[in-house]
Amino acid sequence: MRYEGTLYRPPSEADSYIVQATLGCSWNACVYCDMYRTKSFRVRPLAETLADITLAGQVLRGRVRKVFVADGDALILDLDHWLPILDAAREKLGPLSRVSCYATARNVLEKSDAELETLVRHGLTRLYIGPESGDDVTLKRIAKGATHAEHVEAARKAHAAGMELSVIALLGAGGVERSEVHAERTAELVTAMDPAFFAALSLTVVPGTPLAKLQDRGAFVLPDVPGLLRELRTLVAHARPTDALFRTNHASNHLPLAGRLPRDGQRMASLIDAALAGAVRLRPEHLRGL
Ligand code: SF4
Image 1 (tube, rainbow, N blue to C red):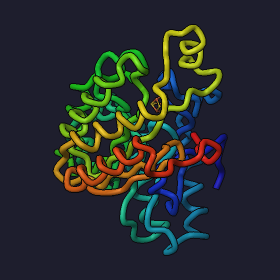
Image 2: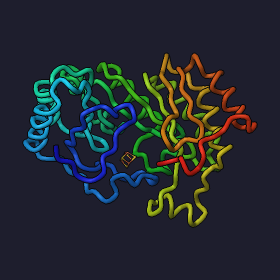
Image 3: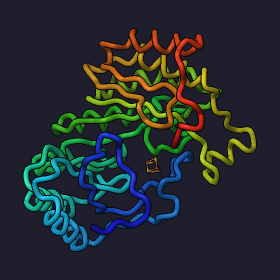
Image 4: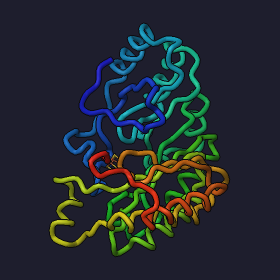
């Protein structure tokens, strides 16, 4: 199994076999992201990817149930890449409970309904999408590449094809200036995208990113910890997906929460209120990560 550069995968794919079918992110423009800045996007030759899966099968057959296809927006692959990869994964690794990948709204919108349905039939059943914000002003400022409405449409298409969605929001993405509206519109977007899984991460300004340059010249101010917690409170109190598993267990967050939304929204809001009042210990700064 050959990997190039740092691999990123969602926490829920910790025990998945990761196949690196693409390198980097085809978009690679979000102002806060430094994950693939040093990698030029390219699709790995199909023969190389299939050889990796064959090799993985010799070692892992029957021992992995999930496959995650990397890197940053692997859904961009055409079906003439996807289908051999999905078929080989099942054939070489044995029965799988799912195959998943990161996707942008743009990746989903660029696929036809028939293509998405074909992908599901061949095993790609979960997409991780990070709109980060539901606020169009924030989405434009962070260069996410799609609007609130486009994310809703991407979710509708993915659901219609039978895909399961995991949606990621980014606390602090709107800065102090858009903090409240960012949280409110993100709660609305999550309601409209109606994912089965929802996670919130906290923004860290990474040196060298365009966002760091904006911060240096005072054009972006990250909310303080109470500000981030207030955004989190808005999300849990106002997001109304049908029934989503919600987590803030990512290392970037100050307050790990877990529950179902909307069922546990008020319980989690009360916990956040207690944290804001100083009655709940927050994750110490030195234990936080990106
Ligand atoms: S789409 Fe994802 S991986 Fe690509 S630049 Fe944006 S945050 Fe980074």
